[in-house]
Image (cartoon, rainbow, N blue to C red; front, side, top):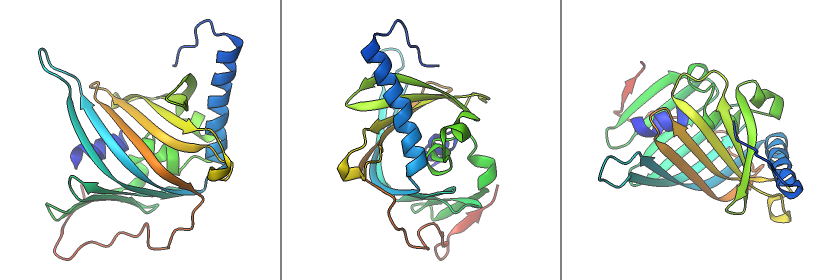
Amino acid sequence: MKLKFQILCICVAWLGHASLAFAQSNADAIESLRQFLLLTNSGRAQFTQVVSSPAKAGQTPRLKTSSGTFEFQKPQQFRFAYQKPFVQTIVADGQSLWLYDADLNQVTVRKQSQMLGQTPAALIASSGDLKALQAEFNLAADPDAEGLHWVRATPKQSDGAVQWLRVGLTAANAASQNVPVLSALEIVDGLGQTSRLNFQKFEVNVKLTSDTFQFKVPTGAQVIRP
């Protein structure tokens, strides 16, 4: 749980001598992010998360894989429901950030305003335009790869927790209501640990029920308020 919490709450690409086609590709990446932030007010998706720790001498990198569902609604509400390999839930209701570990039957509650300044979750659930995002991050386009437009975001005031993160977006199409779709997030922390979230079946501007972001403490659960 601690690892997932750090990944969610820790939460300058080089251009070189680009050709005209490459320059256009970079422009498309920034424009895709701008449109996603501007046109998306809510969303729902399935996700797979792979966390890779730096390899030690003579050893292969350690990989941890988890999966679940993700929902968000602006401003500043989201829910990560991890289903495999363990049941864990992270909910931001606009005021508090709730973290529930089913195995421990333990809930940790923190003030949301203190946790979500420069985080991947804030990148998705809070920003309404590029200007708001650029107040916290330096943005630059990376080369297209895997059929996605990539934008790299580097915290302007890094505390060492996050080196940078990358956002991968699928170009707008009729199936996505002509809105670019978030397909991947990559985060590299100060220790070189990499986390990648791949999103599938991403639905934009969906209607979410009022209780989606209301966390109810399970009966008998221990509540911790650091």
